[in-house]
Length: 289
Image 1 (tube, rainbow, N blue to C red):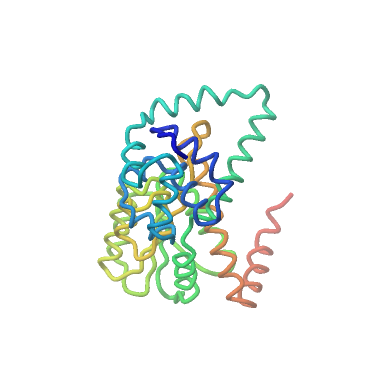
Image 2: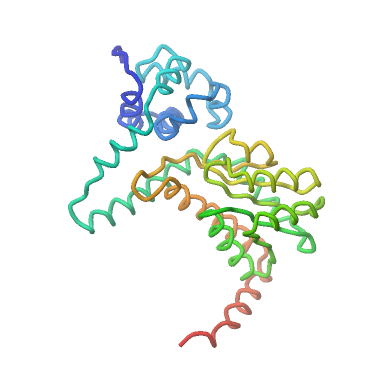
């Protein structure tokens, strides 16, 4: 492309161009489109490492998006007025029926899940899975999240209990920090934060790590504070939805990440998981009407 593009034009063209590109270049274009607020503060080597693509590929895509290189691209993107951009999306999103709202909401979730398969670092995910597989049940497994992320922690806690793995979920920030102060090597702390900047999650992971526990974060932003204090950071980096909330799409992806980890654990534990699944299921049968 010879025409010089600026700001939001780059993001719109990245969305149009992505389907025509090969797998690696498509992942770069999608990452640029979905994460303008992150890309504007990243180095080209950071993007290269996160997406597992070459610096040359990133430069090539930057040129296809009308820039001389990555530096010009990120400088142009940094000039976007994001408040104005969100307002424009809000005005554009004006469905004529409730059915259309349902369809768009479901489609946004589907797109977020599809994008996550490209963007999530499979090596890190495998490391987290192996960490949980090797977890000594005599040790502590602590799950921490605030706001909407706390619901994800409790859902994972509920699933783990079904197969006989006891975990702890703390909603109170003091109890989160107290539990982290008592963690030891062999323990695992998992913190979930959409923004990666939630102070309670950050300090809990930092304290747990200082005490020798293995720390895992699940977030939507690369190089965010919680990733710095994590031994393993699973980063989804999917586009937010201006209608259903800041972390709506991310929540769906994070839930699926946890479901995948649970499925791996259940399969790896074999008959033990099956036995506990039957026990926990039968224990609540009397609760049904």
